[in-house]
Length: 117
Length: 112
Figure 1 (cartoon, each protein chain N blue to C red):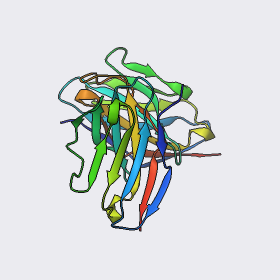
Figure 2: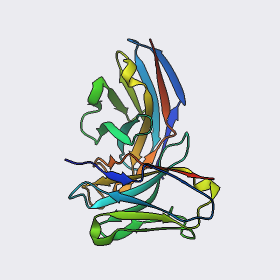
Figure 3: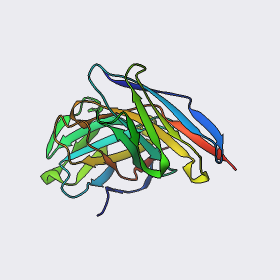
């Protein structure tokens, strides 16, 4: 079974430019997460989807970040315009749980390492 | 609110020695607790999880963790370290809806 697939693996952009990350979750997983991991830190949730619906986007900086999950499968995370402080690893994860099932394992992709110069 | 604290950002052990990585949690409800491992330039891989069944949880690669409610701890151990265990380890608590709240991470180094 294929795992969570993310692309690109690495991205270097100049500040003020736009950037997009793509995630394909494990087949059948209804729940999709985007996390941001700063250097030397643990991941922090940006947004969580249940199927097509964003059910928790409280930590998403909405002035410059946007996300979508069309048809409840693939997802795209976009930053426009990027700032120096956005340099981080962006991790996508998926799980089979529905809302409230806190004990279900989340499977992570390899991440996209973004460097803003 | 839930939170996790990992004691020690870096732990170094000799090959064959005991590995002990410390994690304390804060939760107003019975928690779900996880340990994940991250190798360089990789995503996170689940080592083990506690979901209110047995308090001693066995995971992959010889790791285990014990849930101690009285101490609000979920420390990760392995009897004998191997060079391949060198990685970053994250403790996490699961909030409502499956959101994971991670600790800061502990980097494990294994000396030959």
